Length: 288
Image 1 (cartoon, rainbow, N blue to C red):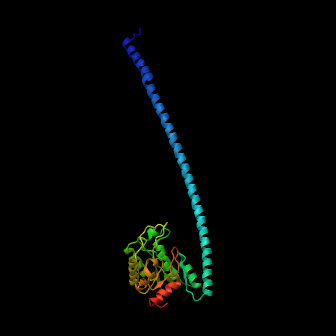
Image 2 (image 1 turned 45 degrees about the vertical axis):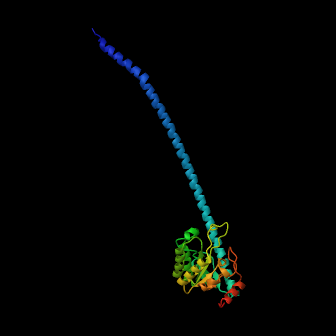
Image 3 (image 1 turned 120 degrees about the vertical axis):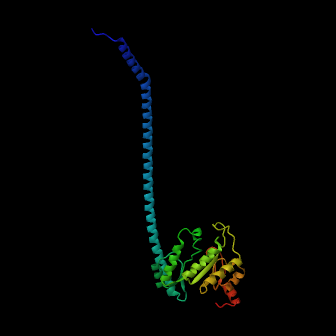
């Protein structure tokens, strides 16, 4: 007969009972926790994917918008170039007519950054001189101008000279530059071998970026003029804006190195009239 081993049966029953209890009271809660954790992670993952999709959509919109901007810029630039060509053609026609009708007047063109080819066209219709101020030193130039570079200015002047034009180029003092900047400007103009140097003194005007700058004294202006004359001995030193900062309409300036002047009102300030300048120069012993 088969004999039962009660100890073995009891042991097996214990194992079965413990297994059932562990699955019910331990494994199942753990599995529930793991399941909930997985669901939470899946939900977070879906949120991240959604955010990524939204970010990509915004990026695509941004790229599309940027492309539209570039397209519009290209259209504007093309139109601007077309307008510039039309304007230049009108300028050429005006100079041609002035040269034909007023042969005794020397024509000086001041139209910003032009090419050698454009200067050659102007020369053919009677223009003899180009005006293109370098404004200040190479170092200080970025502080006063951001639409183009100092090198752009130099390239323009060289192009004008290569086209056979004389060059009138100077700048403005009193814009916050140092004496070293003024010296550098004078040396640059000497290297370029310009024919005329217009010197302007800043007249601080309310509402402008330099409104709070201190006006230069007459002594400072006379020293600037003398320095430019010393460095550019054979060049015309031409007084321009700022003569009102000096006594007697800048009379001393003509004994400090200046040998030419711009008469009449300036772009933003009033100046002397021709009659006053003639009287002052003749009284000072100069021939006009």
